[in-house]
Image 1 (spheres, rainbow, N blue to C red):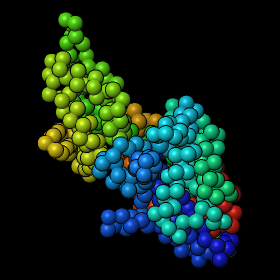
Image 2: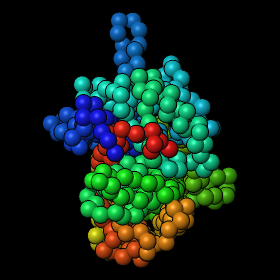
Image 3: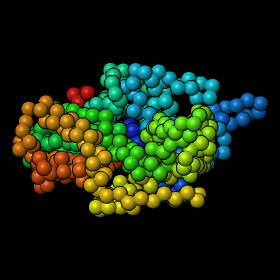
Image 4: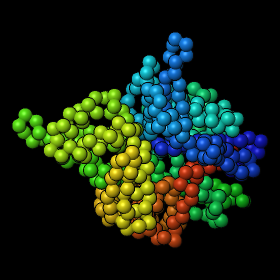
Length: 435
């Protein structure tokens, strides 16, 4: 794979939860772009936007921030704002046409291009969207119940094109991870790459070989599914948190005892959805339900969480519990903010029962990738796992049961894809890897 030593290449891993950008040069050197925030140098830029109005003279002007600055602005909450997170999950949805933010309408491609502008602003000169070699990651299978792959890619190209990246190449995310891993190979190998993000789980089978010292790669098969770490978080919410906030409870109306509607708890799918309840009428309905509830205390706690914008802190506690269950058989879920306290033990075996349907769908995508590759599990010599969900024991067992622990390896859960995408830009033939 020849490289052009004078050119840099940029790899962009636009993720559901986080975005990482890496830059490679012809010498094989690759580094992540860092962002200075609150005294820290971050390699990860949270995939989020926050819009708010500021008054200038007699008129209002909408401002926007992205990444950790968006979360900071949201949590300050000093003015009316609109917070948007994980919008990648709408990329392939034909039903998502636009959303209104204050006085403007935003399509998916408008949200993405706005996010990329905030990314560029904080990256400074390190990120040039008009660079000759830009390689953007994309999932093998987009999230959603009926994802439209062609629509998603049209939206991606429009958004990146607005910033001058008209000639960007779009490569499956696990292929990027495979290129990152391939640098460590000292012999020919058939490699399975499993990439677990926030919204999707993707798999690629690749054949790597060396010819006169040059690394060559052949893609054999790809598959993916729109299920990943965010779904696991929601299982904890549904089984541990929501029942302690009134789900499953009852209220009295016109002499009848009725069940509290479950649809209010669907807002827990994303932490920022809770804040939107303030303006949707849901919060007013919850207050009325609390007055009629047989046990009002849980609903009153739910209302306080919404009122005080505690969704972000709640999801940090959920994530911490999930991480603990990767190394312990039991953990204590603990959330304590502004006088609200929720505690509950979680056993790993219960958690694994909750996520079993999700794991089954992930296993189906894994089977599909291997079948498309036309290889048997014993012909796969190395398995490279990337993404935080790969540490969940139930997921890891999928691979140890098939391939054995000795064939498994893993790397940084955030950076490997962006690094590999940047390296693909150095091959001199990035178009060959375009999905």
